[in-house]
Length: 125
View 1 (cartoon, helix red, strand yellow):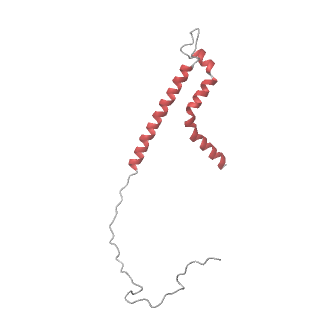
View 2 (tube, rainbow, N blue to C red):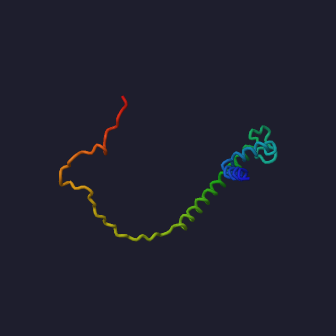
View 3 (cartoon, rainbow, N blue to C red):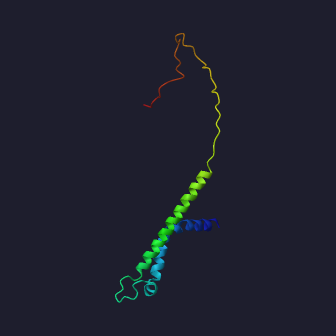
């Protein structure tokens, strides 16, 4: 069930991007009928248009509608952005001062060197 829902929602997201493709395919499926009934040059003897004028009108109408929808979405996004603005109240907190703790005194010279703390890595010969 989840896969079907995912496929359906994915298709719904992709449909607007293939809008001009759908306009073109519907034109090609109905091209003969369009050239005989709707075309401006249908009464001419040597008609070279074959309904392409109607295709251009349909594509232009689709692109204008798509631009209008994008402008509406931009306006709605700006309204949402403006409405979601909020103010934050910050308070200043005094920093905590820490005192340095010395674990070793450097007043005297070292007595010996400890080999347990540092030694170079040994390589196998």
